[in-house]
Amino acid sequence: VSFAKGVCVNENFLGLYHNDQSDFSRQVGVALKGLHQTPLPDPLPPALQSARLRSVLDANASLLIHQTDTFKRNEASWRGLSSQASAEAADFVKQHRSLLDDTTDTALLHGDPHRDHFFVTRNDDNSLRLSGIIDFADAVYFDPLYDFTSVHLDLLGGDLALLTDALEAYGINPTPEVRTKLL
Image 1 (cartoon, rainbow, N blue to C red):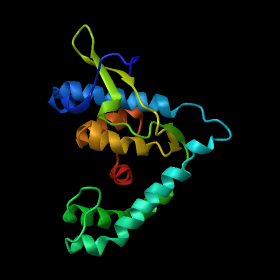
Image 2: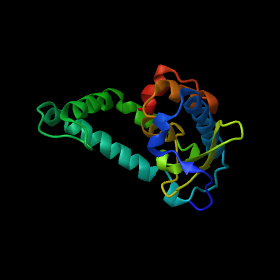
Image 3: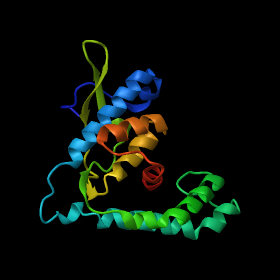
């Protein structure tokens, strides 16, 4: 943190002007592309291989699918979501479970890109500039879209237009299929 210039984005991001949010979203897309283009070592370090992350994703998907009926009876919830939201998440995962099988070890990811990990400053013209990204403790080699899940839901507040800005700046065409896989 002592090397990061500026302030972390945290909750103040949603109070920024839309132009600042859009510019920042594009900068995030460019920054993630730079990270994801880091040359991969051969062999991959065991601690950063995707097996760990894939097992977590598989376990969460299995738990959600297994608990669907309980969620629908309003007897349980998952990760703080209401029973209805948990049931909807379970139905979504059940319908799109095969997308988890369509992931490959392709890039070095941050692994936990949320608001507290992105720092910004103002340029001389008062435009917002991404000035640093911290905390790579959850770094892993995995499908690049995985980083965009947290970017979309946390950093960008779930705003599809801002997600589109970030994906396009990265070079990903934000098709409905890409958005479904991301979620």
